[in-house]
Length: 273
View 1 (cartoon, rainbow, N blue to C red):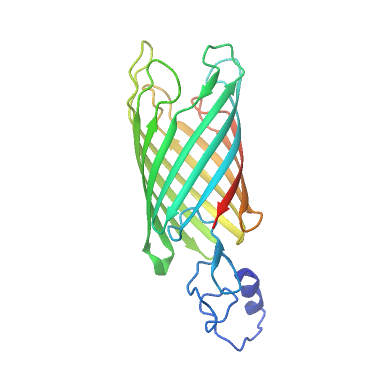
View 2: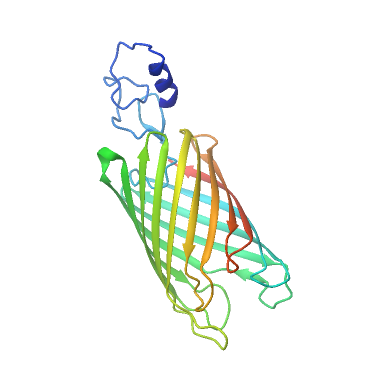
């Protein structure tokens, strides 16, 4: 049962004879989980079945997500390079804490010797909390280690720290984030590496408890000095198929020569309750 439908009924002047403080469609006297967020899908006891808001820090669960990315870029050259990437992500969340493992394997249509293989693997630790719960503001801190599983002579361990914020207003979500990455790669003949700053900002909308979309903008330093910043705009879609299965799709358009011209990402995940 969706609180959006209930809100429409209230807007048309229908009067109910019971109290429902969190507008989840379950009366307060029967609600076993009061104050559930408006973005959650609710069972008949008023408790969350699945949470689709990425920045909601509460709850314990784990999931596995498989993805497929198509990327096309010319990086200022005359030839487009298409890359297909298979991704694997595993998440575990215990109340406010969470952990994530992300790894991928790529294949590019180029004649270079490193046209396929593993990308780097990231292991992250999260801590999320409600900064101002009465205003639906959620913060998340992230610390990660990037292991050099991509094979080349200069690739070394990198580290990152990030903070993100999500502010819910009715069915809208305003979000922003900052990431600082310490690059450990060795400099090579033509390239000198640097630590990077990355900023993103966006706006999301919840059509229903199992359907969400957002648009966002990213501006990040290139890890190579003297190269133009990475800039892109992205569209993201989430759909919860049922209590366990969900899928996401994203499309990014590059806005600078150092960014992929376009990238599309289709993912399918399973949510363990």
